[in-house]
Amino acid sequence: MLVATIATSLTNMQGALAFRDVQWSIVWIDAALLAALLAIALRANRFWPLWVAAIQCLALAAHAARAFDADILPLAYWWIVGKLSYPMLLLLIIGTERHHRRRLHGHRDPAWSLVGQ
Image 1 (cartoon, one colour):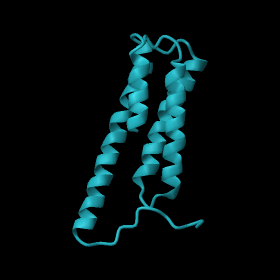
Image 2: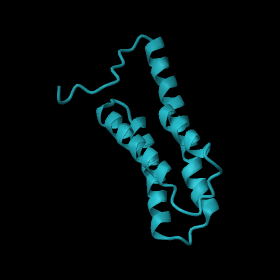
Image 3: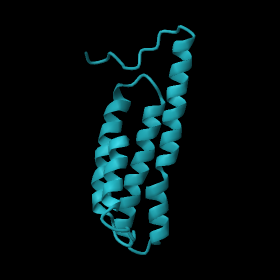
């Protein structure tokens, strides 16, 4: 998520994005992030990585909607693509805190599934 944030920020440094058209550079960054999040979610023993991947899928769907319907307001496109990262970060914080709390109480807390190994 951090690498995707940096890459998106570097994309925005080239000039202000108007979000009047599909932002293809951001689409590719979001697609790569979705692939990474899905790979993590499929191996994790927690529910929250799957929710994070689902939210990222919504961001990718917003790009697709904009590509198919040019009448979507640029503000709505910007809002969906730009603001979905906040719930993702919240889930990451909650998941990290819960993991820390379990470890603090001495519980065994395997993070990854051993299925397929």
